[in-house]
Amino acid sequence: MRLVPFLAACSALALAQSTGAPGSRFDVTFDRLRSAPAEPRNWLTYWGDYQGRHYSALKQVDASNVSRLAVSWSVGMPGASALEVTPLVADGVMYTSGQPGQVFALDAKTGQQIWRYERAQKITPPGQINRFNRGVAMLGNRLFVGTLDAALVALDARTGRLLWETQIADPILGYSITSAPLALKDRIVVGVAGGEFGARGFVEAYDPATGARLWRLDTVPAPGEFGHETWKGDSWQHGGSPTWLTGSYDAESDTLFWTVGNPGPDIDADVRSGDNLFSCSVLALDPATGRRKWHYQFTPGDSHDWDATEDVILVDRMFHGQPRKLLLQANRNGMFYVLDRSSGEFLSATPFVRQTWNTGFDRNGRPKLVEGWDSQPGGSITVYPSLIGGTNFQAPSYSPETGWIYVATADSGQRFLRTPQAYEQGKQYQGGRGQRAGDPPVAAIKAIDPETGATQWEHKLNRVSLSAGVLATAGGLVFAATGDGSLIALNARTGVELWSFPAGSSIAASPMSYAVDGKQFIAIAAGKTLYSFALWEKRE
Image (cartoon, rainbow, N blue to C red; front, top):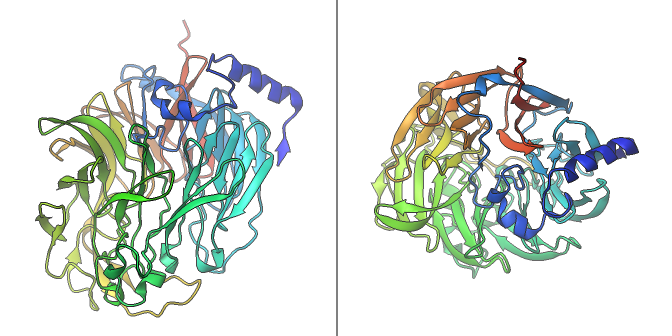
């Protein structure tokens, strides 16, 4: 960690104070997080708000002037990995992770560095994968970030000084933290990656002041726990079901929603035959205790690596003639789901890409499986979607203006070959592989109406991406990152492309928006560079 010269920091402080935000820029209270949509100039959580909408109410940039959008500043963050981060912005200051172990505070108007924290990884397992960090959380005057060696770190947002560090799991077993924690009123909630290694998943909550653990919920039930009978024999011990992407939160009902990845081994379901709760599910939890209120399993007994960790979007709207509190998710299994988030009641599921694994759902939302849908020793049939999924962890976006959800999609098929594999600590535990089959992959940005599940428009892309997401804004735009390295702006109602910026590097992140001194910015990480765009001023 190092501080920039004192005068530069003072300048940034004066800039932040000039925004007229309530309180100090170092005072991101729970009340502010809860009412984040009322502060569209800021981006206070990973998804932009607790509801997971990944939407900006800013509208200075719109269809009439987006052609004047240009790079305002850029900051390089060299290292081994392309950036997957979505930054936070609070009162003129941007907080972002860079390469794993790095956290920066930047002047959000100029990109000038205020401070930098860097932590060397203490334990590096020989089989480590997914060397990324997708962001930080903020509460009060503290930042919280996870590490590749499965520690949770708290920093002073004013200086970047380390306040505490808590080891939450053993990285030798395959555990890591790749995504942003979620800051609630008096606890920091964090999930873990490691399902590819058979590491048994969990969600935990920590005291933001001390780093003490408050509760833990295991996503693979042990003997005597609800759902344990859905695992064959001792397979639960290495059942995967990781929790690696940031959850959503309903402040009105005080309910935390956290999604769960695929069971382990990924492909060979024979060794764990059963539904394998709570893999490929969404969990509704009491944030005070971690107690499960309800769950819904999207893909029982999955053998296709179809993590259900995609963003869950919480909206209140009319659905089939009734006002409902909804939970929306475009799932990696190719289905778009609508649930009642108060009860977990299944309302609908509609394909948003080609899918060949189910013929529909019963009244409780259990899929009616196609014969041979499971992975096979010879990979006998082609299954849609493929292992990469109909979508992945990249951000979708929900616009209250259109009432539509916008999703980056991939239409492709695969044969799933089952290969028996013994569990070995610290080694990937997959039990098979996917083999490309069927038509060439087709990538697109789609607008989906939650009322019907129908696609309203489709904007095809040149290349599939596992991670490049979208952002809808009140300016009637959808910003989308493409697999071939461009940031594009689409008309939110028609999908027509209005603007593009070729970054010259692959984009593995999602765009976000904020404002400083009345000017709207759009930010995106591309390759190893963080870009921020704004309208260039016309010269008279």
